[in-house]
Length: 412
Image (cartoon, rainbow, N blue to C red):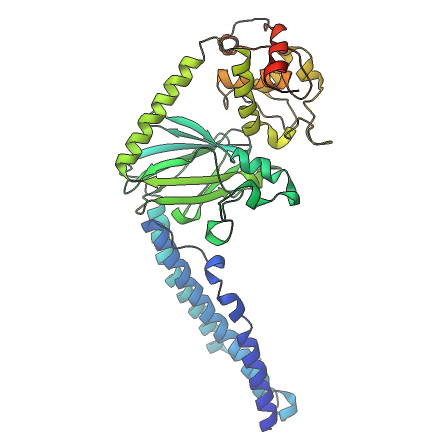
């Protein structure tokens, strides 16, 4: 008998030691405490309910294991012959009810607090696009788009062949410093110690804006506005992602929130307003062909390259090539319509709202003169501005500019 007990004890000890290997990295599995009061309350609630569930599991399975061990047939135990017990029925009904009430009261309290947007000191509208975010600071008029950083996007297209150490020299990609495919071109900058109301919606499909450290996660649904809020107490950079399967590049739609002191935030807002004013003035001036091509290359890398690839070759069966395509070498008016309005029943999104007049003119000029297309066309921002105003125009072209492009820029 003692030998059997020893074997069972050893087996139980081995089973108990198996999870110890995973315990060392428990922080990567568990939810973070975060940097807001709400995130800490969510974490505390989560751990409290987790331990209650653990205790219930230990009690239930402990009774089962002990019963099977002590009352097994080999020990000559005879099974009970009773059919039911009113006492047991009452106990296993009342006890779970009491446990549920004990869990529901604090959970409801936290949920109500998470939905309390009163006393918000600023509002930011978050709009999801495939595959970028638009941030609009409703109190200051600042607005911009945020998407996967162009260098990270270019590197990820190399797949298994990418050498991160060579592509990003001096950057660590291990542990908490792992930012590969988690960096954006424009971070959402917010002040600390200020209650911020977020309004979430989407322009195409359902997205979900999720930043674990802020305990903020809300679906962005076309035609609807969902709200939540955060008050960040600690300056820093906090990362998140789209938590809704929103399409082919769903995994490359990161979120970066940069919390800074109020003075730094005010300076950033002033710089953004100045940049927006400069961008507005750029819409009305005449650009040189070279300026448009240079700017267009940057717009292409940030907005088009993930689908149409770095050399314009596209992805067969999914995204058409730009190199030698009928759109990029044919009617420029059709090209403008494709970029601005998208293509119905396809994955080609409309960029009329996502890009400025100058960016649309630049990227179309670039596409029509890169990748061996060499049409020589030059499209000015003023033409796009006129189209937005409802004017019916025929897009101009500049054949002589193709010679300038081929001799000075090296673009095919």
